[in-house]
Length: 149
Image (cartoon, rainbow, N blue to C red; front, top):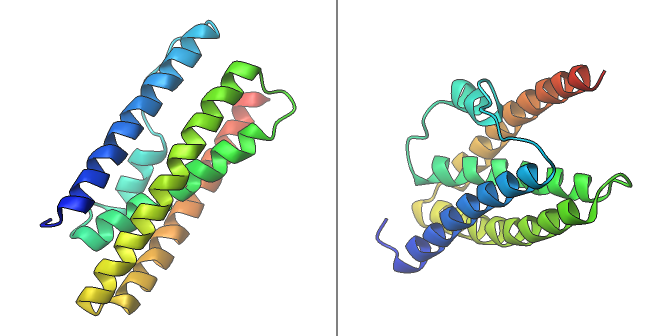
């Protein structure tokens, strides 16, 4: 990608995601738990259904779709009456970052599609990725409910 501004934003985005993983690991430890490997989780299921993105439009579209879900999930958890204050603080922090991620990725994605004359392809790619993502998310919600029973 020959776009210094987008490269800088992508580096910040990746740094944010790494920091989020670290914050969640710390939070889990503070609550007395230990982070565990998730063998068949969200990202692996997305990869199995979507495959490896073939270009920037697909990479950014997949990033947008996954970050939309993350943001929605963070906001849903933040609304829980059972939430402790330290977890609420982590949720608020990562949700602020996700808001920025969504704004910059959506803007860059639409710009790329417009420059390449691929607005229709972008729309169909987003529709396809969102459909797959919803299917995977629904499966994981069902699994989550089983764990809580």
